Image (cartoon, rainbow, N blue to C red):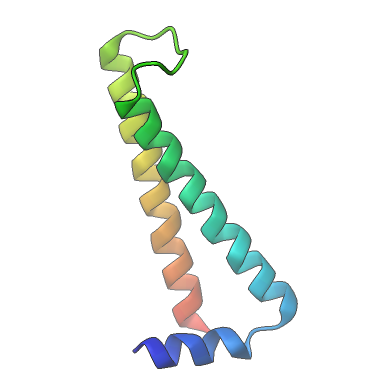
Length: 77
């Protein structure tokens, strides 16, 4: 399975590979930002705890949606 993924990535043009890297980078950014909002108490956000948890969970869910979209787009090629 890993070999087919690597072969599929090698088939892509340089532009498609660059866009894949950018998409993975933004997935990681959203995931890390969501975890930071949830677990860092020293983060300067003036929000009640309930809103902070909801915002962190929303960012993590959005990161998962982006990840599923990346995997789906990568399998179609």
